[in-house]
Image (tube, rainbow over all chains, first blue to last red; front, side, top):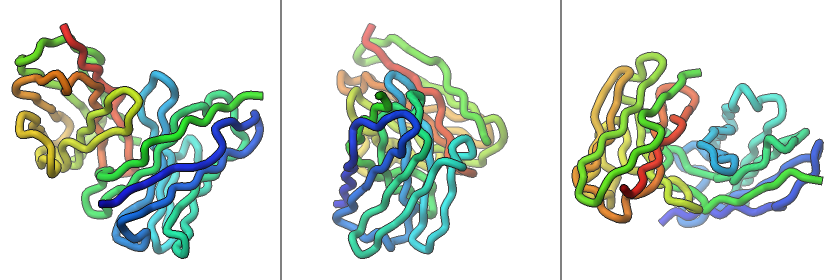
Length: 119
Length: 106
């Protein structure tokens, strides 16, 4: 059974950098899947942030593109998110997820971690 | 970006009711449409993929249909655990989600 677990600071200062890691267990990060980040502001819907394939290919949400970097660490079987120049609008629950390469659906998710941007 | 619009935004129903939620895409997405259930404080859970394929372990009272721009998720007989928020997601291009439909107890 594949499991994903997010970790990282729960509080980030405005203009700072949000950094999260997603540890993958029960499966390889080198498998045929996209490794993704999705966020959900409090009381709102889901927003796709971006994704990375084990080959190094990435796709990012155009609205966040200039601020987002997703990377993979195959040796640790984990992937990471960096979001720079954060504001209060970036306050959200951040989920990592596995997206099927063939079907494009998210079949495994982390439990989510709340990141608050505040001074 | 492909925009996804769900209707209704919220819905009140009773246990045993048949419920249908609609998702419309801003352009044709063939059958590249997935449905998720999200309970409060939990991650989304995949229900249906490719418009009508039921994910393993999902009860058969859930079903999906549609193609092109119009899709539906139907719950044939509501159970207490089905009261949650439902999201559609297109996988035709870079992913986008609908705004959600909150299903509440009447």
